[in-house]
Length: 193
Figure 1 (tube, rainbow, N blue to C red):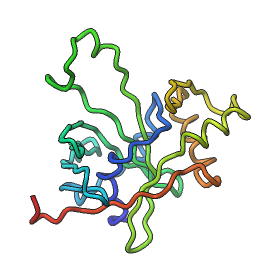
Figure 2: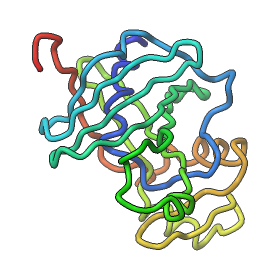
Figure 3: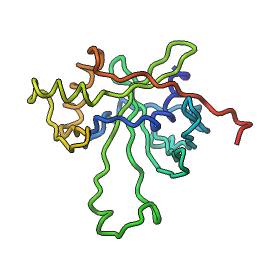
Figure 4: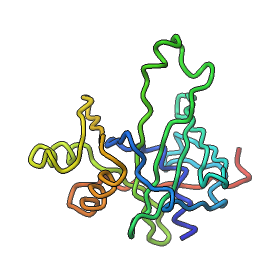
C-alpha cells in the first residue's frame, strides 16, 4: 500500500480531463502517508514536483514546475474508495503573481477537482485518468446518468454531488476505454537537486 501511495505526487503531471465541481472523495475515505513528501518527476523528467505534507488535513501541498519553468500549486487528497485508490487534485489558492491579470479576472476563475486512478503492480507504478473522448461518447447515449456540463475544448465538467460523481466513476472505471493509457512515475532520489 505504501508503494502505491508513492504515485500521488506525480498525479498532477497528468491532470484528468474529466473534472468535477465537487471532490471525488468523502472525508472518511482519506488517508495520509508521510512517505509521499519529497521530489518527483515524470518518466521523461520534463515536469518536477515538490511535495510537502499536511497530516492534520490528510493532504499534500504540491508545487509543480513544468518543462518551461512555470509553476502551479495544488492540494492533493488520496482516498480509498471501494477497491480503487483515487487522487483528488485541486488548485491551491492563487498567490500574488500567479496571474498577470487583474483581480476582476481572477474572480472569474472557478477551481475544479481532477482525479487519477492509482495502479501498482510491482515494480511498476502508474496513474491513469478518465478519457474525455470515452466520456463524451458515453454521455451522449446516457445523458441522465450523471449531472454534467460541457465546457468545450474536451473539458467535460461533472456538476453532481460527490455521491453522484463517485457512483459514476466507480461504475465505469473498469469499462473498456474509460481510462486512458497508464503513465509511469518516478521518485527523484534525495541526492539529486
